[in-house]
Amino acid sequence: MSKSKSFQVDQKVVYPSQGVGLIKSIIQKKFKDAKIPYYVIYVEVTDMTIMVPVDKAMELGIRPTVSRDEAMKALELLGEDYDPIPSDWKMRYQMNLDLLKKGSVRDIASIVRSLYHRSKVKELPIQERKLYDSALKLLEDEVSISLRKSKEEVENMIFSRLELE
Image (cartoon, rainbow, N blue to C red; front, top):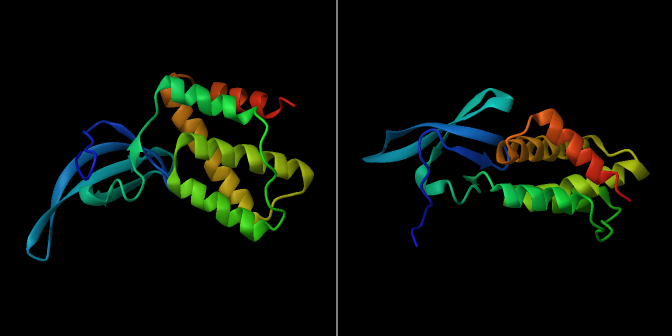
């Protein structure tokens, strides 16, 4: 098993803290006395281009977008029962931030589910609200690519599952 999973130009990938991006190119940059290969990833949602060393991609959690089945499982997770989350927002925020950094589509769905339901009980603090918005956007983007549906359709699917109770 190789140390890093290699991606191809024009492949869509998920960068957990940034969003869904497209690998535009793979370039060599000189660093000290070595040439280091970098992925050049364009993230449409932020209109940002990011350069990531190929060797660091897995460590940063960059992964291919999920299959249709995985996307559907993440959507199903939204409607399932869940364990109560800590009422201390700082502890809850750190727990969810760690999940976001892990970056699996199921982790992202569980953040959306728990913070959505928490927001129904009490308004979320600003940092937590931003985390919720980021996780929701990431979930919408990835699921829309995997299911080949519009972001609006996916948003409706997400909220219809969150309302199942």
